[in-house]
Amino acid sequence: MIEMIEMMEQLLIMFLGLLSFFLGFHFFTVAMDDLGETVKGRVSAVLAFGFFIIMIVTKFLIG
Image (cartoon, rainbow, N blue to C red; front, side):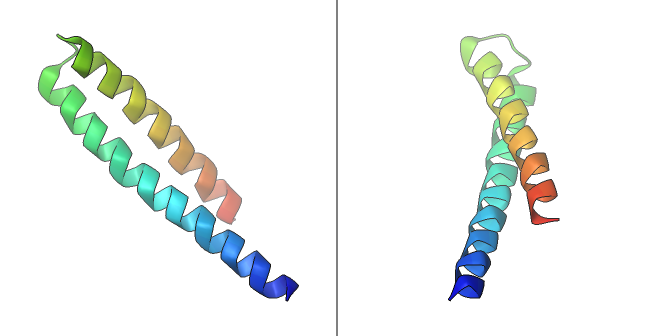
């Protein structure tokens, strides 16, 4: 039973990593298209940076 819980935890961490990768890439492309000229571009840049950090953290959590 404990092995199944650990496996589900690893799957959740991997899903979070993939989700943060795709969301980070999406916000990065919006930010690069706008180049920070509007609030949307600046917010997208901050969100992209945050999602890429989450992706890196989940990479180290997976081991």
